[in-house]
Image 1: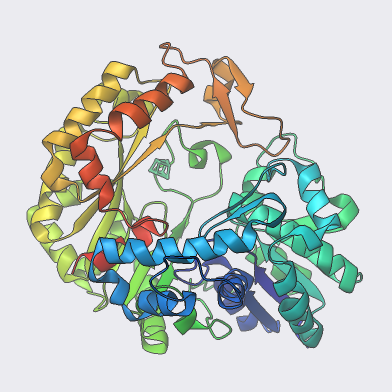
Image 2 (image 1 turned 90 degrees about the vertical axis):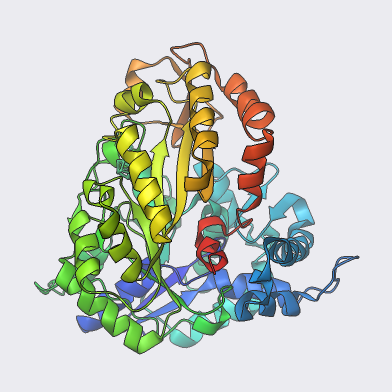
Length: 502
Ligand code: SF4
């Protein structure tokens, strides 16, 4: 019997294990709490794919074959080959989810009338779990497993909006089969809900507790344990089927920090949700990664920090990891030195994700990005010359940007086409509880007490519909931009991009 069971509910991209629950499992086990984890996302998706009755017409391979192509690397021979496998898998999932108005893929699930930002819709999911596409997996596989493990407490980690509807369908089944067990909800999405200054738990009738933040302290307290002073960031993957994830080898997720050391960008939820910033000392990061590499033999390390701290990057330069790695960084001074970028590459760095957001210095200044465009260009040059793939993020439609500004960004991308390996463009969403939301004329996108974003009257008259038009008809339709976007691996995007670097 386990004291605690941690579950990662569907739907998230199944390319690597989740980050939160293996880390919690290590921490709790280390403090003497018996703990088990289940990745219900991976299990549920594989259940639907391998039990599908009909293979879509014109499919070149069975779902099992396509899953294998992703695992053994065959699908990564070219972006066209890869796209074909992903499309065929998604078509099977789409058929499996079609019943009763669901749209299901490898990265998301939607319902035609239920919204994950309305607490009443989530509660309705718990009342009628039989309507959820994962119901059969829950009933035949997951619930019997939980009955066997018989934990006192069950924790659900809801990191993304795409998990909320299926998590609540699962809660309904847990309440039906195990009415006496304690249920706790945590994870990034739950923390964001709770950052609403007027937050009141709308799920009290389901008898679930919500936890904000990383969760270790809350859970240790629950089991009357005191946190040991030396905290590593190591994870326990012993309950995860590492060879079943859809990547060519094990991708090890690890975070060297939580929160953001910059925390000043005006458009970013990190800035106003005010989650504390914590980083693991670089020497401890080195020890954790060495232990994880020896224990699990990863082909790639995914550093999932919002921004890897410069001190940790310097540590990697002096202590190479001997395994390829990638992650998000800010445009920091160190990288203006070509030798530093070469040393980063030597340390195993294969790809860096960088939020540039705009190609206009004036807009960057108003965003409080702390980025000088000229220096950013130098860094992109150095990284490219060092052989590090650059995955650059751009944001359109912020209150600081006009259509002319956005066109300057397009010019920047085209001019520096050779320095930008991949782009991730997005339309800006205004965080609902940000200081900006107070100073702008805002309205709800849709009715939803759990909505995290607002529509707003654009101060420069560049309203959302026009931003959408620009984004779809001008930006994405530009032949050169199209060429860059065509390189982006569909569904898994940056998670699988490093596998195309050769
Ligand atoms: S650096 Fe990134 S995570 Fe940090 S505040 Fe800016 S956008 Fe947010």
